[in-house]
Figure 1 (cartoon, rainbow, N blue to C red):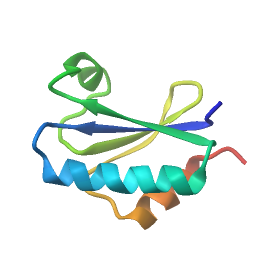
Figure 2: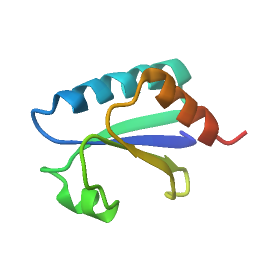
Figure 3: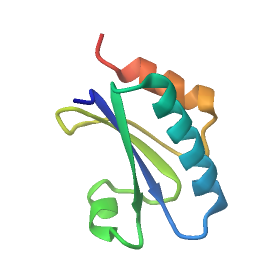
Figure 4: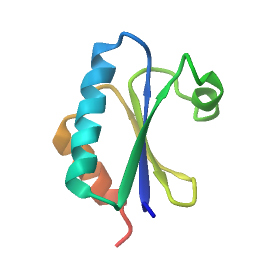
Amino acid sequence: MPELEIVVYTSSFCGACTATLDRVRTAAELVGDRIAWREVNVAARPDEAEARAVEATPTVVLVRADGGEAMRAAGVPTLDQVLAAVAAHLPV
């Protein structure tokens, strides 16, 4: 079972969202089974985006196994930033 989930909030036809998804996908492949990731299109799932108070896309939210938010960032992260955030929030 994953210890951390990366949720990427996106919108349709968003180049920045595509770049963010690529970096999160790569980070997940590098880290392995300790993390999971998924995309939430805010147009298709406005209820979920609203519940997390997402105001811009792309927004990346790291969610702990207990469902609590570990961190969030808006904009396009680098791969190093995604990996550093994951490393900082994975349980030891």
